[in-house]
Structures are given as C-alpha cells and as structure tokens.
Image (cartoon, rainbow, N blue to C red; front, side, top):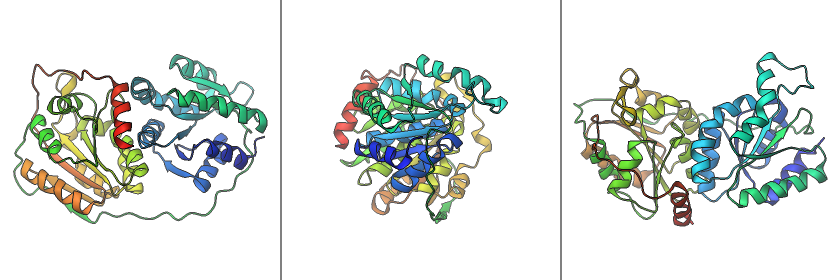
Length: 375
C-alpha cells in the first residue's frame, strides 16, 4: 500500500496542490490528504470537478481530479468537448469499482469492465497506479510529462492502494444570502447581442469574461474578440464551474461568467458549490430567453424556475432580478466596486442574427492567449 501522505507530497513537489472531486471509498484517503494539506473543492458531480480543475489551470495551477469510475461517465462531456479542444491538461485519479477480482455491487459490474476502454476512447493516457511508492513516484513523473505537454493523464486506482489518512476536523461555514431583489418592474427583453455589448463595454484590464456554449460565445466574439474572453465550446452547463476554479485561483481578477438558461438548468447543482466556496471576485450573469436558441429554438423549462431565489438559497451573497440594460450596467459597475459573489438574472428576447458566424480562432489559441493575459 502507498503511504498516502508521502505520495501526496510527491505530487505537491511537482506543483499539484489544487484538487476537485467527488468522493469514492477507494480514494477516500487521498481525498482526506487533499482536504488536509492542499486546496480541495468538493464538486457536486464529476463533470463539474473537471470544469473547476480546468478553471484552476487557466489560473496557473496544476489541478487534480478525483472520482469513482461510475462518475467517469458524468465527466465525459467536459473531457471530450472542453479539455480536448482547448488542450487543458488535468491529472485524474479514477477508482476501479467493479474490478473482476472483487465481489462488488451490481451497479459497478459494467463500469469495472469498461473503465480503461473509456479512457482509451477519449484518447486519455492512463496507467494502473502502483501500490509501491518507488514505482508510483516514477509513474507520477511520467504523468507530469504528459501534463506539461497539455495532455490529460489518469491513474486507475484499485481497492486498497492507499494507507489510512485521517481527515482533520474542519469547520463548515454557513454562507447566507445578504441581499435578494425579485422582479418589481416590467421586463424590457433586450436582445442577447445588445446585452453582451453592454457587458463587454464595462470590462477593464483585470476582467476575464467566460461566455457559455453556443450563440452566447459566438455573439461575444462578433462584438469583440479579445484576449480576456473565453468562448465555451461543448461542455454545456460547465461555465460557472470553470469560473469558480479560475476565481479561486486568481483572486485579483474580476471573473464575469455569462450563462444561459438551458446551460444552467443542465448543471444547476453547480450553484450550490459556487455558493459554498463563494469567490468574491465572481459575477454570474444569467441571460434567459426560455429557449435552446443554438439548436433551433426549442423551449426550456426556465419559465417555471425562480433562479434568483435558488441562487440566494445556495449562498450567493447577492441575487438580483434585472429588468433592463440600464439596470444591468448599474449593477455591474456596483459589483466592480463592492465585489461579493453576485447573481444577476435578466430575461432577453429570443433569436439572433441569422448570419451569425463562428469564432475564427481555435479553442487552443483562445486558451493560450487567455493564460498569457492572466499571467
């Protein structure tokens, strides 16, 4: 068995000190080490953990993700449509529940057989983690070489690999909403293009703007292609988790997350993580047109959801219903002065320019110039 602290310290020597993940009994001791000795962000699902870690990478960290192999299926979307096109490297540890040598629970049987095949299909380099510390050190150095070349690397971890690492007592702060403003006026329903233009007009040299998947990113690119913009591709619903990872890693930046109703609905549990870790330098703006505009205008169920109340209940410091562009600009300017994790909700009109183009810059180029801007 690996001495968990010694192994964790080897990772730390190589710069791996930012962790995000979802618990698994096979990995509990490594998780305990991460909580005790490093920065650990508990995600509500594995896909969000990948996105959080990816945000930390943009901030200059070398992130680690921890998950059970059943959760690898949840992580497929960001691994294939965020990390692959942007070439974002993360170091992963995935447990091997359902190993044929174990008498495991029936829900793990199939995943036990296909875990390594899934990693192969996603073109992710991997190894079974050795329980011998000397061999594991060599494996970690090899994994680090892949990471340094912008390639993710995963260790598959069998039962009993890690020695016991006791979790130190920790306090869990309760974060409450300080201010919530519900709808009080008629909505003006500006277009998404007008709204993005207003948001973009208020950025400065320390602002990073993260635009969600689909037409939001495409319209922001059309308004102004800038080194401090990121246009999400794929990985729908992951933009605020990416924002949290970046905001926690680079607290001197103003991180503006521009989300959509369909996107947020897909991974709404991320609001709970955001509200708990509560980065003061993150502004989360939701543009709601009640449709999946990028895929033909099919209706979402957002008309039946009170996002302002949900964000407040999840611990966002401020959660405001915005009725107009003028009000939006005022609140963004106020946030820049006061900070605090803030959620702004604005209803926008449906539709977009029928001749809307796509970014002519590749995701990899977007990543490289954003990291250069941040540095």
